[in-house]
Image (cartoon, rainbow, N blue to C red; front, side, top):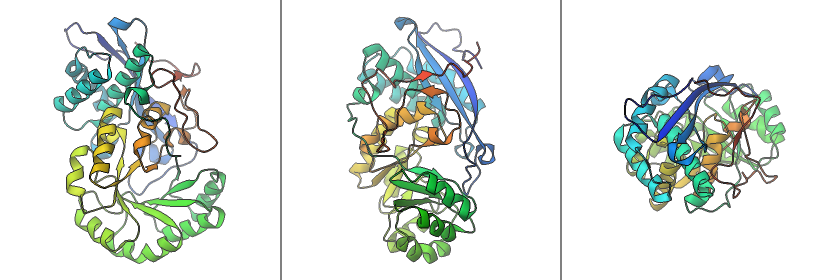
Length: 365
């Protein structure tokens, strides 16, 4: 890809975009369709420059999830509109908040495209001001450890992957297939830590109720999105009888969804690709906590750009699932480090603190 057009107006901001097709380390399948049939992932990365600040570059990324109506092509198509919306933002925390509001007002949905530009703006302003993104947001660098996610496969295959991931304090197991309990039992034989299950809308009410006792016995600590996104009645009925928190993901896309989930579920999953970036994620997590939800900070199969941006707001979350870059065979970006305690290390390096690996081709323009 190359330069994203901005029309005839002379503006300070310029974006170069690239569609990345990245191979996954292991097959990664979920109960609903995924990019690349679970073998690869597709993301759009951008490089943002501002005429006022010389050669400084802000990195951004947007994951175009077809489930939410986005493709790589739609991300590229709306970027010029989003650039026009933010105009010439002030390189300050207040300027970032204003830019976030302008993005939200200009166009509905398109969370992946907004995410790419919002992250790039935060990275660029961090570099201009010499501040890390979490510091720009006024947040702590002390964050919870991430779990590690295992896709749907034969029970023995999932158990072997669990054994290899035993260093993580929690595993998130994708379910919604024909052998969910058998898979969890096989994992429990080789792994002693916390288990979180994510059905990605793949369960039925009767099936979920039948499995509840087994899930409790197996030490599962939460159930994520068991039913279709619009079946809030099913979610509420299950939460009413479940000793485990039900966490809304596909039912919880932006901050505007929170009010209707009060009294329905015990927790919500916030993802930058859904809500539109790091700034909106901060507001989302804060509001969710105010309403009494437990908060789960998640991700897609994304590079270190989104994971680093997500880690900047992770101090606001109860649970963290930021492993998308670990699922990718060759992450194009360097600089984000995972500690021995499975916590992402937030440093004082300006912006996201990332660099593009030289072995990966640059955007063409």
